Length: 339
Ligand code: IPM
Ligand code: MN
Picture (cartoon, rainbow, N blue to C red):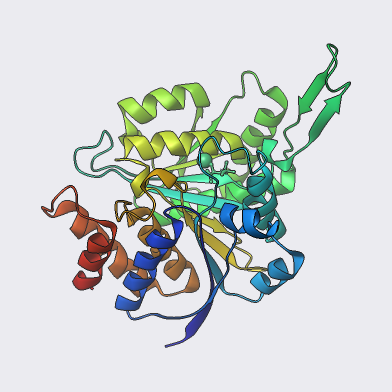
């Protein structure tokens, strides 16, 4: 069996502890990883002033994948300027490594609003408002202007839409929903809608429809079962996936894969949740989002069988009776033992 070069960035707060459980479960699934640990994040920035050195970014390119825990300073801390780590570390990796798909799968856990539902959000990950277009004019004066543009290229939208159609084609329901706000964002929305309409004939088995993003928020809560694959832009995808996480049982279950499907660089796998400094180091964090992200990594690396077994073991654990206050390490152990 091959060994994979994986860059491991625990980051801040609960990040390192949920990754420890992820690595434990991957080892139990029989996959060997050759890991390099990187100390990056808020704590590292406060110690060294470094966010993501160019040399580290170059080293990352030599890896097969990146596993990330969580990045972020404590809530209310002003020691780290707003957006510095988000733009300088997380978004920098997404953009520099061309991780243009943010895949976020949701399987409603028992008792959640989406219990029994299974859908995936494909979020465009390198454009939209996240591209950072904009600026200030007459800053600090009463006549100040702040603009924040949304960048939507045909190339960027089409590669994302194609990926979503391919995914929909591979799933039993074969259904795709474009989520946007075409009634107000008439330029970007038009490009997205035309692109979906033009790509669709290449996937005759896939049915598709369109929801405005505000309506999608209602449907996600009232009838999440209507969704199979959702494709949407960067900001709508960010917001919708927090809502989807809550509906499917809580953000502690929400996994994500930042993919470069062309494999011109390593893809990055991270739980959707943040650093949760308030519970860090207390063995209280739910490692399931990170473990599921690890399974997405195995799948992308080609270890489909091991990935499938991790997903089954995790699902079985979630559905089996267990104390609700089981700690981080005990959850990791229980999933590892099933493997
Ligand atoms: C996410 C996060 C990030 C995003 C932040 C931390 C920049 O909320 O991965 O959803 O907005 O993409
Ligand atoms: Mn988010």
